[in-house]
Amino acid sequence: MSTTTPTSWQTRPAPTDAAGWIDRAAEVAAVLATDAAARDKAGATPYAEVQLLKDAGLVTLLGPVEHGGAGQDWPTAYRVVREVAKADGSIGQLLGYHYLWNWAARLVATREQWEHVEAEAARNQWFFGGAVNPRDNDVAVRDEGDTLVFTGRKSFSTGSKVSDVTVLEGVLDGTDQHIFAIVPSDSAGLTFHDDWDNIGQRLTESGSVTIDGVRVPWSSAAGYVDKQFQPRVYNTLNVPVVQLIFVNFYLGIAAGALETAATYTRTKSRSWLHGGYPKAVDEPHVIDTYGDLTAKLWAAEALADRVAEESRPLHDDPDAVTERARGEHEVRVAAAKARATDVALEITHRIFEVTGARATASSEGLDRFWRNVRTHTLHDPVAYKRREVGRFVLTDEIPEPTWYS
Image: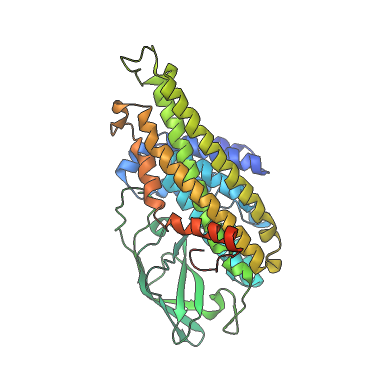
């Protein structure tokens, strides 16, 4: 990464409200945008990019103010992810997953546990990764008295090499009890493999991980008291949260694609020689396409922001979250996910219709927007999101909480 952290972040007071933090995220995006295409092509581990997020204060956005965090809420975090993703979808995803895993303590753990985790994370600017892929076999967890031992393998571990701490999840031997724990990413027995080589989201460090006898004290088992889990409906809010993170970095990538394409059209595109217009920006089909794509993007962003606001009362009073409230929120998230997926895929491929053949040059890097969206929108089939919405509308059925709903 050739750019450096703006010195003004050290001399200016940190933002104090949502608007200020969204502006700060836009400043981070401006830094990332200067060499985004080159970094995507190089595919190097994004240590500098994560340090940029730390220097900007974005890593501790959700952290408690008394321990150095910004004390912001989820609607703000979603917008911050969207802003960063405009410049670099990979870094937007890394930041969004970091927010989820940082917040996982509050979702699952006891108050004493999550207050400790959030304080340490804010004070030390921990960057979180996670080795929690439900499509793989469960990691085995062995009880050795005061210690738990995690052993297994996961195909994906987003954040891996750039993380300070990693969330592990497994099933206790002889039971169906799932256990989450946070461990240092350099723990003995934790090996991240450099095997992430996909067409998009190339800088997310989402390769596989081997978990070979990683030892964790029982006291770190999130949500357990005397080896018994303390369940709440709020525990299941991880899926709506992560799906809204997806929505926002998809829309961020789409917005970045549209902005980058518009700049190209204004400055480089040539009008069609038989069209009768001196400039590409005067051609009716070009104007219509930008108008169409922008209207679709704005509509999807408005839905995403509305659904994010609807999540606020769920986070404000976690102990009061009911199955019905959680289910209705998940349906709204599913609708936003379906719209964001379709809109982002359409925008990132149709920009070539209004930029022209020369815009396909690898030096322009316009293909990275589509590659990024296409790669991550395959995370879970969007048809099942539409099904959640359809069943709710027709039969008033709310989704059963699973790893994907």
